[in-house]
Image 1 (spheres, rainbow, N blue to C red):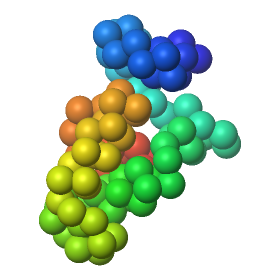
Image 2 (tube, rainbow, N blue to C red):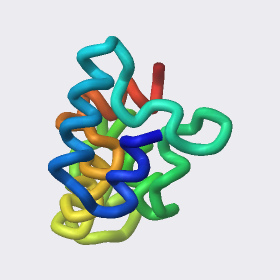
Image 3 (cartoon, rainbow, N blue to C red):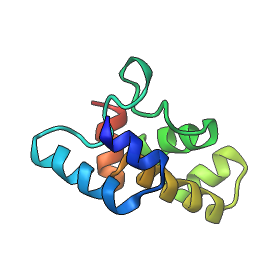
Image 4 (cartoon, rainbow, N blue to C red):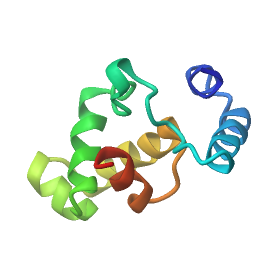
Length: 99
C-alpha cells in the first residue's frame, strides 16, 4: 500500500498526494491500513486512545482530563494521528473510527 509506505518514510508530500488519490477514487484515506482492517493499528497506543476519545466527540481539553495529559500533549498526538492517517479533520477521524 503506497500510502502506508510514504507515511512510514515520513514522505509527507507523497503521502498527502496518495491520500488525495484515494479520496478521489472514493476510498477513505488511511482505511484498512492496519491488520484486520483496523485503521488505528498503525498508531501508538497513546495515539489510539486519543483518536478514540476524539472520535467520540471529546475536545482536546476533555481528552486531556480523561487521560491525565496536558491539552498541548493531546494536540501534539492528534496532529500526528491526522498525519499518520492522512486525514484533516475530527469529522474524518470519526468516520474512520466509526464507519
